[in-house]
Length: 302
Image 1 (cartoon, rainbow, N blue to C red):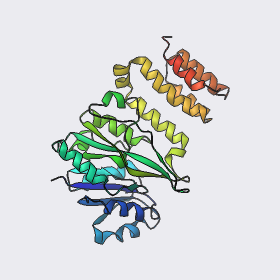
Image 2: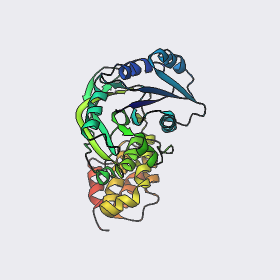
Image 3: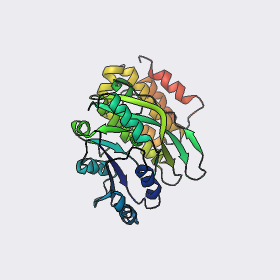
Image 4: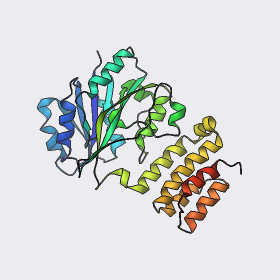
């Protein structure tokens, strides 16, 4: 029997946890355990979670406020079942999400090295408007692909707890793109199965989303690239590395983060692409088509 523990990190999410937890508890194939790990909240997060205690929701609290990755790791450690499903404290699961994922696990013989993930939709919390997310499809042995393409979101993952221990749990130093780093490391030892149907809603909040904190976004993307640099070069060549690097640098330049772009280039050896990018940053000007120009330059041998 496949028994799932749901791990939900939360910090100051008293206003979103009610609808999040309702979506988790109202699954057609219920989880055996739901754990909310409070990352040192200062609002009424604890009271909200405890109001769901009679429905089997378990409250855990961290006092040091080390971030969502540390909270997820704590949830993994205290979970009592073999399969972990991650959820974010402000997002929504569709009612048959776990049923669909458990079905896929059973069709793959309940193999411990299978990671099930699914598509999702982005919903604007202010307008209610929903749009399909253009995330990549990762199937089977996808380690090489994941090195260059950000991987599935936590909200869509179901993975065996032993696999998470095998990679040393989640990297608490990763500032953003945390699921990408996790997926890369899991892909070394796991086979990915993708469910094309959207089974969760990523609720986008204009006030506090990491995705709008551009500096943190660029930093996290670069952190993952730098962490896996040797493998990217081994499997995709130095040109592949430069293209990946210039993709992130281009994003920073496009949004006017010239100092951040310069910082990304500090450790890079001289190359036509780095010279061009540094010139854009120095003069604080990024022309139309600049990203394409940088990627083409990255492919040059000099």
